[in-house]
Image 1: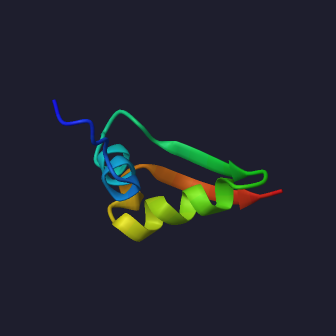
Image 2: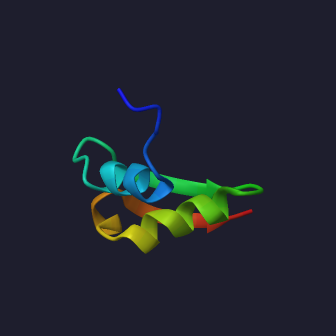
Length: 54
C-alpha cells in the first residue's frame, strides 16, 4: 500500500457515483466549499438533491 490517500476530486466523484448516497448538503461554515467539490467533479445529479446556505 502506498501511503497516498485519495484526492478530494476522487473522494467527491466516488460519492457522486455511489447509488446508495443521495441527499442535501446544508452549509454552515465550510460546507459551501464541500458542495462546490461535488458539483465540480461531475455526476452530482446522482448524489445531491439540493444545497442550502445558512
